[in-house]
Length: 130
Image 1 (cartoon, rainbow, N blue to C red):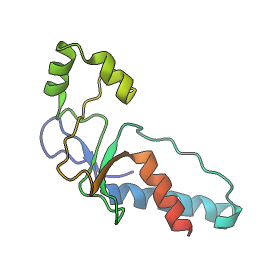
Image 2: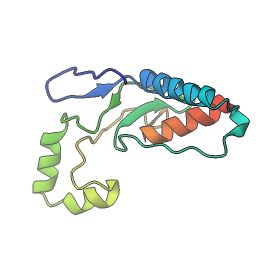
Image 3: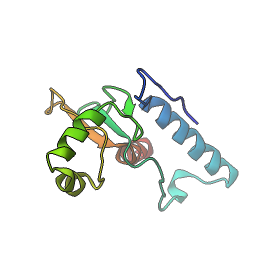
Image 4: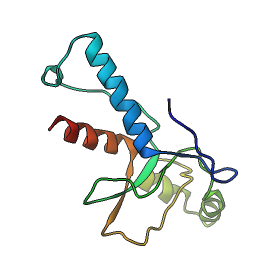
């Protein structure tokens, strides 16, 4: 479990560091229960909110801002405009979702990367193992 953050009505965020800490704690607990060592693990399965996204620094791997949760409605008006203009098929083609509610324009594309949470968990898991 981790905290739900509601900075404004309709906005939903999670603290990326808290997400990682909760995943690390669950993994540590599960490994302890079966007395496993990191080298005993051949594969992992991750299930999550697949559309939760994080803007993170490419060099440090640290988040720039909170995770934007799939339930967040902060860009709903803009999505409605794009759908009305006939872009719903393009949105679905590019994102896999017929109605993705967060489209971001970030001002530092060379420094930052927008990535879904499962990718962050995989990267951090690999780095934690090294």
